[in-house]
Length: 338
Image 1: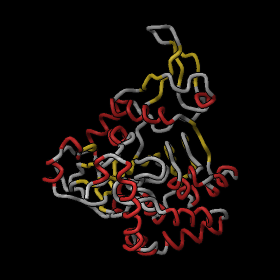
Image 2: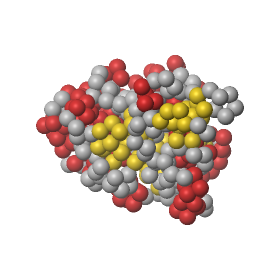
Image 3: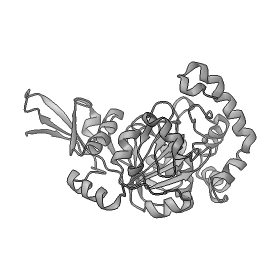
Image 4: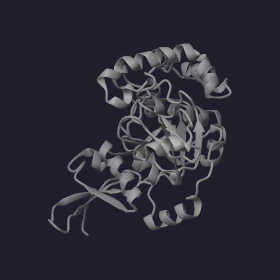
């Protein structure tokens, strides 16, 4: 196969699919095992300094903020992040010194809320390096290639763009048509956190609403830690098996963390906490403000439940549930369940 062009971005997360298959077979159990554990233990066991990782969800929706805070508390360093559509999550991780390399599809902005002062300051000052760029679809298909056990996924995205030049993709001559085709390398993150609506003790997980690429990410990640709004009996999962997006044999840990996406949005359950994100965006304009925020909400608390009490407790979450309920008539039936 003739290579026509190669991106100059750093290749992160790739491994030979056969080696990946052997690794998964040796390290993953396919049996029904109780995988419940405290989030602190899951972070200690399954994340390491220098790892390349990804988070589930999309933008400010259904990301695992609880996992992010726990990595900060445990002092993780020199992590590289698959920033597929990373906003508040990567901003806090970069500002706290956890992440210093980024493979970027969309980062350093809070969408309609404005840009990310802390993240942009870190990149411009050299504390964080964007080592590769890619499109959102490109990330999706890097995970899909890994999930399928393929070394790459052929696609037409990014052809003729500067994004391709800054990526780790290659352009080859299609042996069927003779035309250029982009090859996106498979991506096997060292670990991933995915926040879900419910799962059983084994890790069979269900997500309400759009799943984004989390099905493929769950199959690509070498280690998968689920944070969940609630652990439910396996009988509840089995009543609607078609809704199980992530099967148990992909999962390494199940961590029950109610409101674990706060201040993000959890579809059908609670709305994003705009006041809290505004507080972060205000404080993070300076390094001193970042330190103030982290000390107040992360380093001085024992766990995520204590953080929730700090931001307003059940009263605030009831308000966010009310706001989410107001949006329900505009959404699919799953969001209107009582």
